[in-house]
Image (cartoon, rainbow, N blue to C red; front, top):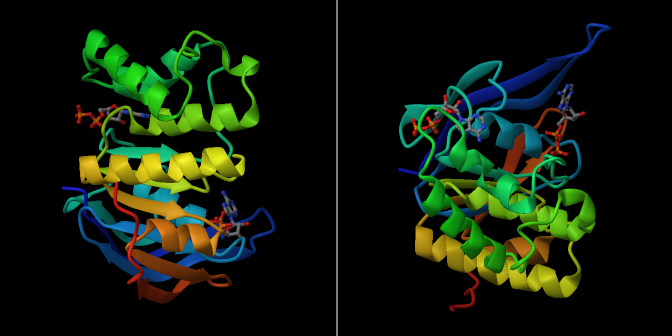
Length: 231
Ligand code: ADP
Ligand code: ADP
């Protein structure tokens, strides 16, 4: 259900002076359902662009993107996404922010069950009892954890994370690594995880994909054979 397939995907950005840039060039990638894949590569190599196309936030210039065998046509609750710099709605509480993806769209989930899930996720990201606060009352790391909880609220089959732990202190980061691994194991979700941290990629993932810029391409695709922690 959560398999990801990119076939000859290209993303070309054209600026006002008509210069064009191949952020992603003819890239194919197949990720089986349930795999945990990290994406490494220098700034500007196209990692975020790749992730946004999978999320349905931008359409490729050419090629096709599908999830679970179905073409991606826009954002969907099957896909959870957390960015490095979280955008939270400042006039909504933390709990309301987390609930949002499950409560919008044509078929909003039941209010009570969403509230229960919000409580669980608040505990997961170590923000239990802070659901009534407003984002402006939180630190950068706490805001990031709100965004992570929000990305998980719909129990997505695909979890996309763009350097989600960048702003966290070392101890919270370790905690989040283990929480993410246990969510991944329990849910069977497919995870695509962008990071600059090779140690983090090795600790978390089944497979590591490396991209290179100008044009953005996958230059290595490695199976991670180091044993990972079990919990
Ligand atoms: P990464 O996530 O690996 O740092 P990005 O996918 O953000 O790389 O960017 C890849 C390239 O595409 C960069 O050169 C970036 O400047 C460019 N780019 C990204 N988004 C846009 C956009 N919306 N418009 C124009 N250029 C963009
Ligand atoms: P269902 O599986 O219940 O049909 P979808 O995930 O297809 O729900 O979402 C229904 C509609 O709501 C889609 O058209 C989608 O564009 C919109 N939608 C759902 N969640 C979001 C979200 N987090 N952001 C933006 N649009 C969303």
